[in-house]
Structures are given as structure tokens and as C-alpha cells.
Image (cartoon, rainbow, N blue to C red; front, side, top):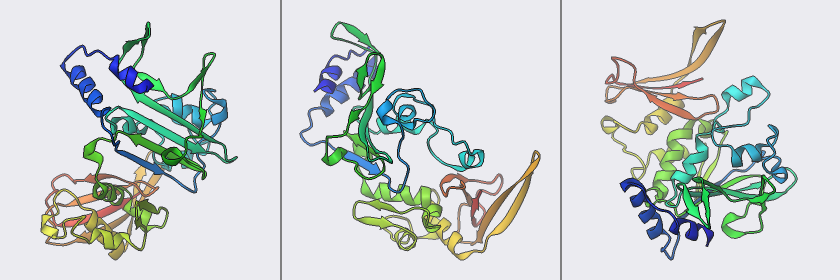
Length: 304
């Protein structure tokens, strides 16, 4: 109800904000609300939730919940350099996927303590005789400090196993596609999955080291004609990684040397030569087109 009254108080100052506000107001009238939720397991979760906005670098709840563009750094420099995510950008991506720019996150820590937070990105507005900035937090204000709510909301918002759960209500219709979610998982994390570092459940489908090869070979998910693979190369990457022996490549860099594993496949059917560049954690970060070789018949996977 508070979100509804807030959005109804917004005033557009130009064509873009007027269109955005009109879309948000129309979305609020839906009797059924689309949403997506995703959660992890076998992870640490966020720490220090009971301290709220503590500004303590050891309390990852406060950093995640109330500091956009800031992330917790591991003391182990090598581990910090290799890990993915947690670098700030993802904190606004969830809001962008919602028609109301709204997201919630539920956390269960090592002690089994469960808390619920959230953010909304509106525009600056006048509400109940006061002016407000664009970012709103789902939190209690105790004196001048944000404190989280204990998670007693259940069902969609429930998280009773250690880790973090993100809930995006009023999901944009363009993202409401299970097959696109499955492809996105395979495209970005095929190495982590094949290396048995990651298992992903998308509704009733399990994507793991034993199933991903079968998934990427299905026409419902991916183009299977090699000459027609010109934008999405995941089936080729999976085949290259699974059938080719790696070559070790060492590149001098300052006072050290960087080592990579290269899996390379030559096939004259391939129309676009691409290198899938993969971070140490097993996440693909780029389909790299080598200069002057973008149309050569090869496929490669390069792992740091």
C-alpha cells in the first residue's frame, strides 16, 4: 500500500518520466503479479544483519543493503581477484528488471537468523509534506540508522536455509521467459557447471554436469546448424571444452606471468570465429572476436 501511494504521488517533469510513471501506475492495477525469485545454497549468506547500517566492513548485510556501488572485499587478495559478482553493478540490475523498479532480498545467516530487506528506485518526489530522494529502502529507521525487518513473511519471501534469496516482483514481461533463463545460465556458466562447481535448478529443470550437454543440443534452446551459429556460440563452446585437450598459454605481465588454458577447435562449418573468455570461477565474460580473424572457422574457450 505504501508503494502504491508513493507512486501515485510522483509527478513527471518530462516525457520520459511521465511515460515511466504512467507505466508504473498501470502495472499496479494487475490482479496477478509476475515475479521471479532466485536463491543460493551452500554459501555464507550475508553477515551482520542484526546490526543494520553499521558501516562495519565485516558486516556484508549493511554493504549489500544500503551501499550501491560498494562491495565487500576478501582479505585474501588472490581469492578477491578471482571471485565474480559482488562488485556493485548487480545491486541495481534487479530493480531494473521490475516494472516498479522494486526488489526484495531475504537472508539466512550462519546462526539461522532470517531478515528481509529491499530497495525501490523511483524519482525524487513530494510525499506527506516532505521531499524524498529516489532510492527507498525496505527497512526500519531507528534514530538515524536503517535496521532490517525479521523475515516473518513466508511463502515467496521465505528463506530458511543459509544463503541469500532475491525476489523481483512486477517482473518485466520481456524477462518472463523460462527458456531465456535456461539459456542465460548455460551461456554464462557452462564452464562452472561442467567443472562441477555449480548446479542450477530452473523450476523443474536441473542444469548440471550430466545434463548441460543434452540441453545445449536441443533445438528448443539453441540453433543446432553450425553454419547458422553467428550470435550465440554456447553449443560450440561446450563441444570444444569437452572434446579438445587444453593447451597452456603463458603471457608475461609486469613482474609475473599470467597462465591460461586454451581449448581450440577448427571446423570449416563455423562461420564466426569466437573465443569464449572465462573467469577463474567459471563464468564467461565475453565472446571475443580476434582482430582480422572474426570470420575464420574456429571456436575456442580461454580460461584464466
